[in-house]
Image: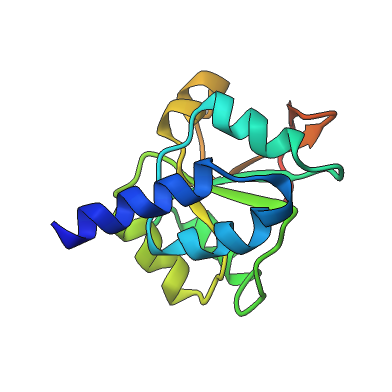
Length: 137
């Protein structure tokens, strides 16, 4: 019961954000991977003035682990949104913790399907608040 309440609290913190409180609240979300929708993602991207990389990953993906290794030990990057895709939430969080990645993680299954993501890792870049296809390796 306590875990469910904590996840709900984190979900409210993440999705009831104002642009000024964005980075602090997102770093706290690494405790869980709340679900994100295209509308929520659009709101996050619209709040950013600079381009943002949206990266899909999974705990079982070897190339994703290589990508996360390059982020090891770095503090939260406001220009990166990590979306777990086709993965178990606890495994995704454990993978981020293993690599010491202090970055928010969202369950991005629905977004991955909508964007036609067929392989991982996969990255997109926001341009004028919208996602543009492009792998960022």
